[in-house]
Length: 63
Image (cartoon, rainbow, N blue to C red):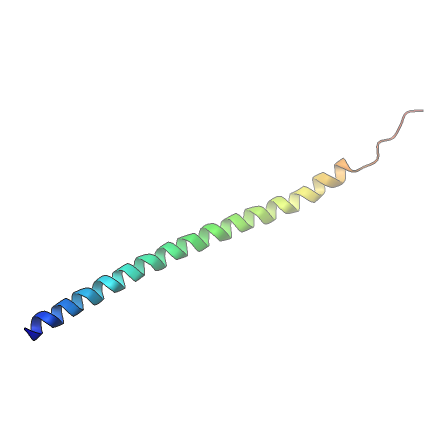
């Protein structure tokens, strides 16, 4: 009876560790995705000011 209990405990522990490992992998993938999106957003914001400056130049009027 005690051997069966030990194996059930071991099996439960193994499943828990496996499940937690999967969650860690999912979180790592999510972090990579968020870092990529942040880098893209920063790159887009750096390009916007250059475009805004061109648009804000005063228009010369023909006399």
